[in-house]
Image (cartoon, rainbow, N blue to C red; front, side):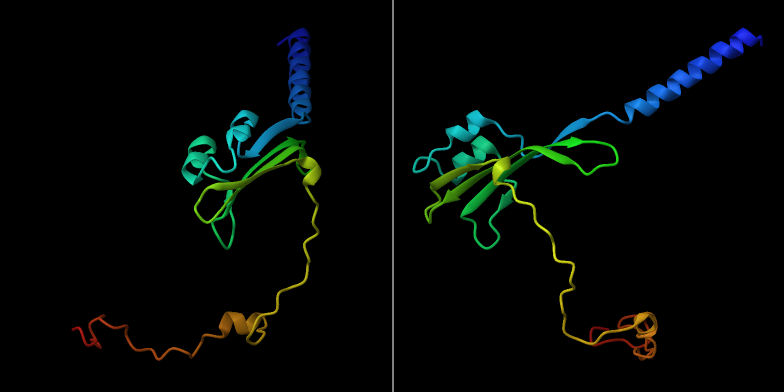
Length: 162
């Protein structure tokens, strides 16, 4: 190969590597959860719609209330994704649909990014009943706890069913 061919190949390789490196620094956007449609959300009317009509209009909710089925949540978050950083929320919407005892819509609330709150999880451990085991007790604690008899039905010690 001649020097000019090597020089062109080297320049092309450097430009491709630089292009790949710069493309990794670009921002991306992603929608997480429900794809929010304002026209569909506005179509839900308290006192008119019921569970079936809400589900046929909006689809299955992202989350249902934990202890009862009277509140449905449709959660949509649009985030900016940047390399090395945590995703940054740019748009956040929660459509909260409440139902009465008969399954008819009683309330519709539309919450946005301004209603979003940052929380700091507590780093403490939840106390549990029982005793605390060290590493070796966890690994070797079951030695000697079993009788060594063959399991029921294995052929040696047959159980009541044969």
